[in-house]
Length: 181
Image (cartoon, rainbow, N blue to C red):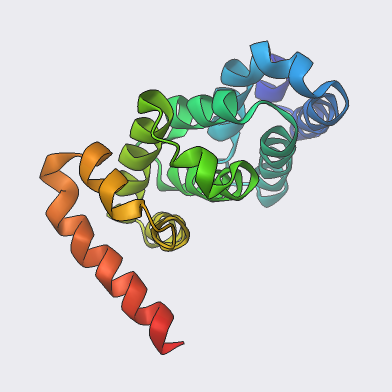
C-alpha cells in the first residue's frame, strides 16, 4: 500500500497492478485490507496522469468483483462519497454502480437497516451531486433500483427525509426518460 503512494509513477502503477492481482487471486482473504486500500486507490483516482487513474480504476474494479460486497461498499462510501474532489466521487459512483450490479437488487433492497440505509443515502447524495459524471452514475443506480416493485416502500422507509421530495422528482424524470427511449 505504501508503494501505491510512491511519487515515481512506474512504481505506483506496478503497485496498483499488484494490488489488483491480489484482489483477484486472494479474493475474500483481502477483506481485511479493503478499506485501507480503497482509500489509497480512490485518492490515486484524482491524479492528473491518465495511466495512474486507469490503474487505480482497474484495481478498484478487481476489488468490486472479488471481495465481499458489503465490505467493498463500506470502503467506497467511507473513502470517496464525501470527498471534495469530483474525480474521486465519480470513481466512487462508478464502482458503486458496478457493485450494485454484482450484489443484485434483492440483496441491496433487502431491508437490512445498515445495508439498505447506507446504500440509499449514498445513492441519494450521488444523484444530486454538482458534478455531472457523478450525477450520471447516481441516476443510473436510481434507475436500476427503481425497477424493483418494493422500491417505493423501501424508499419511504430508508431515504433521508430532507432529500426525499427532491429525489422523487429525479426518480420521476429518470423513469420518464426510460419510457421515452
